[in-house]
Image (cartoon, rainbow, N blue to C red; front, side, top):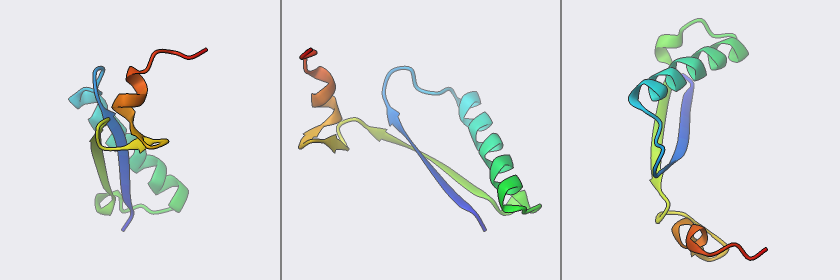
Length: 72
């Protein structure tokens, strides 16, 4: 049974309910095609929405990183 976990950031411009449904349907079809499985009913797709406070880069949360002014 394929188990697919998609992680997206939880912020403005969130995907709509309809976009998430389309993502689940399309990913299921791609996995079935690539793995040559015709039992898509057993394919699990989970979409996790991660707060930018809950992951980081370079020792800072993504929220902090995005709040910094451009240094270019």
